[in-house]
Structure formats: C-alpha cells, structure tokens
Image (cartoon, rainbow, N blue to C red):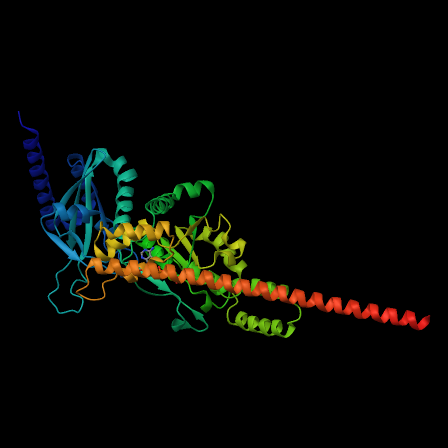
Length: 512
Ligand SMILES: Nc1ncnc2c1ncn2[C@@H]1O[C@H](COP(=O)(O)OP(=O)(O)OP(=O)(O)O)[C@@H](O)[C@H]1O
Ligand SMILES: [Mg+2]
C-alpha cells in the first residue's frame, strides 16, 4: 500500500502534469483558454486542499506600504531570524534597529492553536534591463499564507487577528520613540507646532533612586493602565491616567517621567504652556498627540494664567493700603494674559472631555515644586489620579545611586551615611547626592566619593542648624520688637489718659 508521502508525491506530480497540459493547451488554443480557466481551477481545487492568501506590499494608495504587509513582516521577523536560512536586513523608517525578515522565496512554518500554516515571501514582476533611479519599482513583493482548508475558520477568525496584533506590538517595540515639544522656535503663523527629536533618555526605574515599594507600586499602576483598554471601554471612561509629581527641585520628577516613558515604550510630549496662545491652540496641540504617549506639563504652578486667577484673588485679599501696588500687579497680569490666554478651565475641559474622542491611551503628568499652590480643581482625584511625592534622599534611594554612580553595593561607610540620613534626618536631594558621588577625576575611587558625600551631609546638617538658629533669632527679634511696640503703645495710652485726666481736673477747678 502506498504511504501518505507517496500519495502526496503522486498527487503533486499529477497536478504538475495537469498544469503543464493546461499551459500548452492555452498557448495553442488561446480562444478557449479564458473559458476553460474556471473549470481548470475547480478541478485543481478538488485535488489541492490548501488555501492561499496573498498580502501585497503596496496596495491601494500609491507609495504607501500596506499596514498588513508591515505587520506581517514584524510578526514574522521574530521567527524568521531564528528559523529562515536566508534573511534580509532592513531599516524601516522610524525603527530604531534593523528588522530581519526572511528573504524572497524563503518559507517558514508557524503553529497556532494546533494548526500549521506556511508563510512564504515572494516577489513577482519584471527585472528591467534599462537604467532607472528606482530599480525596484517594477518588483512586487508579497507574503503568501498557505493553510489547509479545514482550518479556514481558525485562520480567518483568529489567526490573522493574532498576527496583526503581535506584529503591531513588535513594531511598537522596535520603533524609535520621540520627544515632542512645542518650542517657540517652530512658529507657524501665530501658533507653535510640535517638533520632535529622538527620545533617548537613559533613565529607568532601576536607576531611579526611590524606595523599592514605591517604585513597584508605580510600575504596577502603569502596567495595569496600559492593559486596561477593555476595562476603560466597559466603564465608559477615556483611556487616560493623570499623575501629579510633586517635590523640591532635584528630587527626580523629570527623571521619573523619562523612566515611565522607557518602561511603557511611550512617546513624550513636553507641553510648554507659556508658548500656547489660547485654549483653541491648546486643543489643537493636544488632539495632534498620538496614542501611547505621555503628555507632560512641567512646573504647572508657574504656568501663567492657570495661577493668574489665583494671583488676582490673593492680591484682592492683600492690605487695602497698598492700592497702587495692586493696580501695578493687575496690569502686569493682564499683560501676561494677553500673551497667553490658556485658562485653567480650558485645560480641565480638555483633560476631562475631548480625550474620550481621541482613542488610544494617554498619560498626562503635571509636575510642581509647590503642591499647595495649585488650584484644587486641577489636582482632584479623577483628573490627577495618582499623586506621587518625590522627596529628599533616603538610605534606600542612596543605595541605588551608589550602585549607579560607583558600582558599590556594600561599604563600611554606608553605616555612617545611614545614620546621617535616618537618625540625623539630614535632607539632601538625590541630585545633590548624585553630584557628590560622581567621581571628579580618573583617580577618584568609590571611597573618596563616599567620604565626600559624608562631609557634604555633615555640612548640610551644620547649614540646617545655622538656618534654624537664624530663624529662631529672627523670630525672637520680631517678638521683642512687637513687645516693645506694645509697651510703647501702652505708655502712650497711659500718657494720653493722664493728660486727659489733668485736663478734666483743670476744667472742674476752673468751674468751681
Ligand atoms: N530620584 C532620582 N533618581 C536618580 N537620579 C536622580 C533622582 N533625582 C534627581 N536625580 C538626578 O538629578 C538630576 C536632576 O533631577 P530632575 O531633573 O529629575 O529633578 P526635578 O525634580 O525634575 O527638578 P526640578 O523641580 O528642578 O525640575 C537628574 O539629572 C538626575 O540625574
Ligand atoms: Mg524637572
């Protein structure tokens, strides 16, 4: 009895013969060729149990590569680099690394839910003899997917979706991420537009100096957000999340944003509100942002009329005597508002409303040095979902910096540093700690740097002590001055009282 292999070989050669006969027949009797083609395909289909789908590189719009083709290319790149024997290396626009894909005429197999498929990279078209600047223009590349017809359901309903989804994920991972900014140098008429550079900030959560538990909490919050597309859809909320980072300068707010972007593989839009003319312009800029991005507004407390309204209010509450001063300030505020008319409500409306229509996930991050200065409407939960305090360097954070800067994980000097940071509670920002740990010459070893940090911490302690003493002294002097004023006033009052009495007595004597 013939084996399965022999059976297929026989069928295969039978089909080849049929094809050959048909081609000859078509050449000699072209008038019958077209009529017989459907019949031929039907006969061929009876013996050939496979279905083929082709995905062309260029389809539809001219010069625009088909998304499906690119998705498949990315999807297959992970397997082809491991399995195909002939590979092709490409740099695609916006990709940060080489994309390896299988070369023309190569075939690889893929298994999905127990179903096997075959992918082939193919090329068709004339190879021109004449010279052209675009020698490849006539070549048409495509991927051909082949599968057994009994698997049609799985392939059409599930597998192709799976390929596209995975392909997109790989594409996103490979893409070059961008840092966008709306700098005033890029003026178009009156409005600034986004310009971009490659985003290559090296900060990661591993290099971020912060308590481990806090880092883990933020990381899992980000992961949960990025995977919650369906959840946000279900609850009818725009797929966005707001973070407020607050803390003194040099505690790592900007570094944290870079670490977030690197962690999620998102683009960053650095929005400079002072160059945004008005709410309409702001809206346009925000609508232009792409999905998978972090929109950053740094130092929100310094951002013009957002706090301008508050400034006016505060001024009204000021001592009425200084009217001239207030008027001057008001004029100044109006001047500022003229330059930029972005309002708090404009920004809030956008955060709350329009994003729902934009689709795609976005994170918005505000940073500030003074959280108390912000309008409560801006930072209420729901708008800024997570408030993260970036504070002075703790021992755990120091250890991260020591590892980053000096490659040191243990040292007997650590005890002293721990005591200074935890027992003495000396406040130093991670930026200052880092500056002290940074070797200043080739010769400087880790120990020298750690000792420099200890000295700096001690100096900081002295400085803090001096400050406290100075403040106490100033306060005491103010109290004394107040007391003196009080006593002087009491003396003057007594004097007045005395005078009054004398005068009253004089009048009485006069009357008597
Ligand atoms: N938590 C941290 N972990 C690691 N490096 C840090 C940290 N904080 C500060 N640094 C270092 O200090 C420098 C300044 O930090 P960063 O710009 O992030 O501070 P910031 O809080 O944004 O300050 P500002 O309020 O002035 O904008 C960074 O280049 C970084 O190297
Ligand atoms: Mg900053």
